[in-house]
Length: 378
Image (cartoon, rainbow, N blue to C red; front, side, top):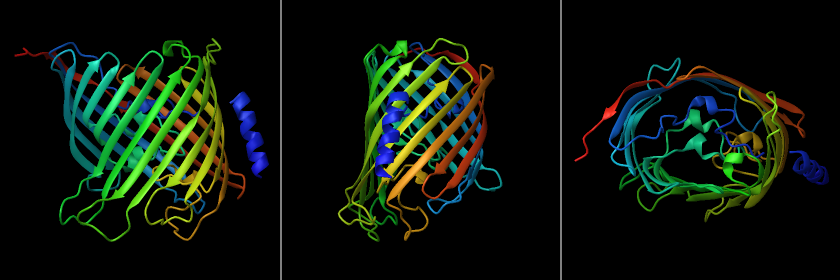
């Protein structure tokens, strides 16, 4: 089986992306689309809403099937203090249909500082979750539905030959007497291009890292400190065939490392790895991809459980080797400038257990701007 996995991976290297999640299957979510360039002293007030359905029909022991159906609502106002500094404030709301209470309700505040061209520091609400563009085995797309927005510090670089996203998210703050652990996430997503990015072709080198920490030095002491990490490295090749039905093709293969760094290990493994290769074809309204994943003792604290060797709800269940064939299909349409529609179908076939899991989803996002103007800058 191991030789077969390596052979399949080599084939995918020759004919096959580590697909970033934005843009991609969830680009119609319009994640932080209100990040428009503003003139100094200009302000805008708008709204981002996303009504979604994602039905996970998962039948194996690794994770339970669940249906996410609801709406996020984010009114906001953005003001460019000058050519380098911008303030963004608003509120984030999320409600699942059938739940009488609000699932999430919290302020959304952000300060951005463009200290040099192509480099930005962000403090407050991050351009996070799907925006990071992690590989699906490392960062599950379901985090959009079940976690709150990320808050912390971020350094974004957007240059001609590389992009990078260095970030720290403080998910849970604790103080003396707190009844839960401190939870922190941090990571780096780096892409290097052999040709200028605007050509959208050629060889691309990717590196990703993600660290999960749960603990703290004060308050809660019921379970041991947890620190786990994932590292990703590999290559991607981008092509532009130039046809209306196929205007982008990408091929890639990647190695993913899983590391248990906790003083007390609560997992059956200290380390593991995954091999992930894929081929993706797309045009302006549709995308499809076929991927193969082979994991050995693989785990990822924020990743999709279908790829992992351990279960998220059966602590006694684990399987050393994971072999999956993935297929994803997406359609998106923008009938108006501020309306974005998306439909997705994703399937996962377990080669070892001969089991077929799948999910499908639909969403409508709205991004109207209600007002705009200029403020005198004193």
